[in-house]
Length: 141
Image (cartoon, rainbow, N blue to C red):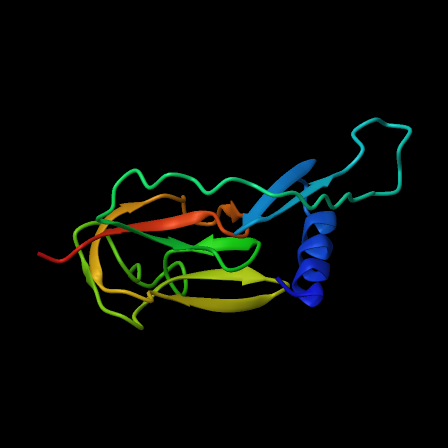
């Protein structure tokens, strides 16, 4: 993760209503916290770098599409539009599966593999973290 990405994550976090957040990417773990007491008026963030053990793969046939950034998850381009994908849909490599809005920029999230949508893990218009699983695909048979 580059310094610019970390700074953007901190800015988004400080502008949010979240009191804490943890992100993991490979062996990098970032933890952000804000003071919660009424006497604290200036937001303070803390970054901690630690080594983490790789998580065991629960289902080798499961393909997870994760959020590349912190932001707001949207299933469709606008509230009036049909969702990009629904459970049971076939997704091909490069297909747009959702959007994540960060810093007033809409970012199309594309699948880097093909598969069948097994689960949509986030509710529409919900805040998502970097690396959070958005959609789970199963392998095409």
